[in-house]
Amino acid sequence: MIKVTSVSSDREFHLALTFSNGELRRFDMRPYMDLPAYRRLANPGFFGLARVDYGTVVWPGEIDIAPETLYALSLPLEAVSA
Image (cartoon, rainbow, N blue to C red; front, side, top):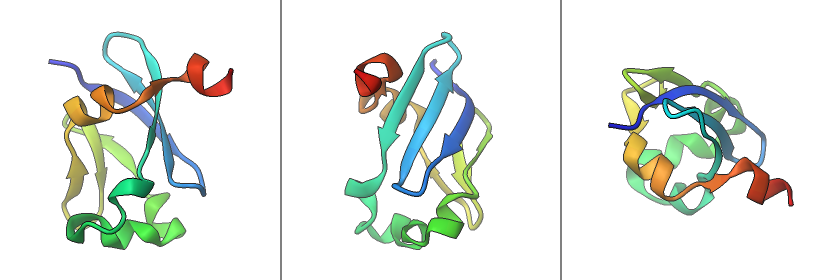
């Protein structure tokens, strides 16, 4: 199973992710912000509290997102910067 090993966030609601297979990818959280589970993340300060726990990205208040989703719907960082 793929796991997230590190995360950093930016003020545009993107996550820069490193996965257990060594890949660096970027995930856009903006499409999720209207879902009830993720509404609190619309606050940039709160979004910036993203961290890795149990192999995925988590925020305070038991907010998380599956590592499989993060991997499948993210872009390789090389593709993002090109």
